[in-house]
Length: 342
Ligand code: SF4
Image (spheres, rainbow, N blue to C red):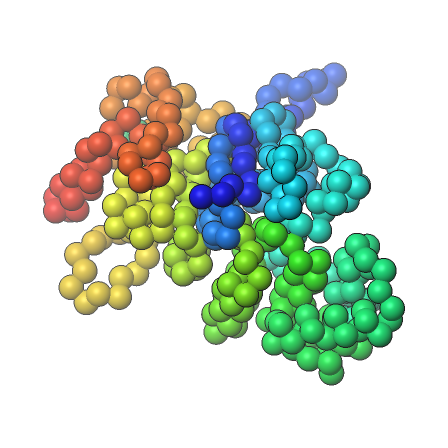
């Protein structure tokens, strides 16, 4: 499989200042060594509770903030050599003809759109940055994009506030695909919408992905949404990936105790389902002082001595199913034992 984006041991630490001299006394480890290869044409989902580092990952990829260390490598379609974009500014990205290839759709389209701009100009803006078109050509392009997202010419000369949340997200998507990108980073793109509208936007995104051969990095806390959208899923906990697998594999052959607990929270549609909700003890520890050893040990029902001292590596269990747990070879049995004991 061809790789489009690689994250190599990516870290993002925010300094915490203290004392009279306002010296750095600690750091928030929002992202603490994430390695990931995103394949061209796939939808890779990233899930986890808030503060796990999923949005930090998305923003680092789109270069909305810098990384503390590690690398982000982009493999553009028609260029032979991969490009390290870790420290490129938006202007440098533009100069290297890369900016328009990576686009982002945010959770709340109202904050990512200028309320005083007409829809036509909102969508046309990224096109103008890339190409010089006549005004007739430009309008035709914008109308074609509106049609792609289920809107039409009658919406050209209106302002964002005249639209519903779902329509605004359609406009944001039209803007994101206006420059024919290779990869879209989607950060909770449907979380602010009503459930019925969510489904429409997800279907639109799936259709566009097929039609345009797009790669998606899809960040969400919503497990059913990610199950519907993603080919593979990475589960994050406290700034690290704890499990990564093909979607069906992750749901059917869960290996990490944290994933197991997360998935147990999904209401089952099967009437005779015996799976019970696993309640984790305590809260997510602070990313200021993540626990030693396995970060999940303070909440894991299966923790052993080694978990308290030694960090488990993210290891391949076969077929690209990656798990970071010392007991991953026996967790399926442990889960069953625990369920029957409850
Ligand atoms: Fe639990 Fe230990 Fe596995 Fe961490 S390494 S998830 S503490 S069993």
